[in-house]
Image 1 (cartoon, one colour):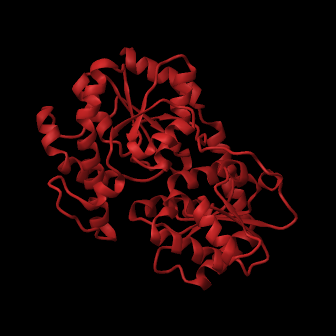
Image 2 (image 1 turned 60 degrees about the vertical axis):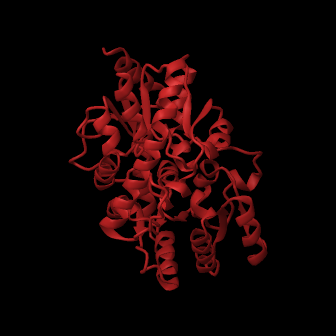
Length: 373
């Protein structure tokens, strides 16, 4: 079960592929609009709702409009509530699917709350795989309140804890209070394309990659991306921008000669000296796996705590929204480029990730959980 966005599909693609490559039957489920994305990375796709994230973030169960309250605890509660509404919408369709295709285990991403509900309904084990290094306790609590009718129906007082937790967080960034988990190495699962030499060759100039991930489809994120490109363009660096085709075309028109497009970030990341982005989970994990320092400007409260941990470790600089003035962004980027300690610390995180068990190694833990052994 993914979460209804491309980033959540990409985060779970490696484990789903590993389970399938081990000879097991796998179905990946998400929203209808994610079906091409799931199929595009080579996995069988079935929708659990034809409604989009936009519906769940703007409409309550009764069809009434809901308002987004940015910042602090209110934003976290809002996030938990709409993820809960999406889970509620998906439960009955997945029950019907299970009547003809019954799983031996249900694997859900960090906020895929329909996964534990379906597992409880079927009486099969639930495996939770983290999408990134985000903290979710407050979001989980809000989802629990939103899902009270479904929990009551199942005779549950809370969202079930996983029978197996699979965590991709590097050990140095994991909170001391985090529950026991099966570690897993982060392996990107984003779509690929025909490569051009500049994508895998490191040139003479230092390279800064700018992206706002899959969020660039949102109007505010497109403006955020354009501002970042403008702020780093005067530096003596090569700027490359990871963005969908329409956004990339607009940027190339504004910044002639700019390399911009929906290229595979896992290929380009190792050629970069800094990755400047919105603190999205998949982008951040790809940068850490490649050992590249990051300039993080979190576009969501749920990204802030994880961004601070990476910065405190010394592998990034985090600038919170409101403090991200052009001068602050430029100065932070220059600091990351000129101070080698950031690359050294980023390299240490990459080494930690590389030492963790591969998704193929984790398949055995899921098999044991599914068999009850």
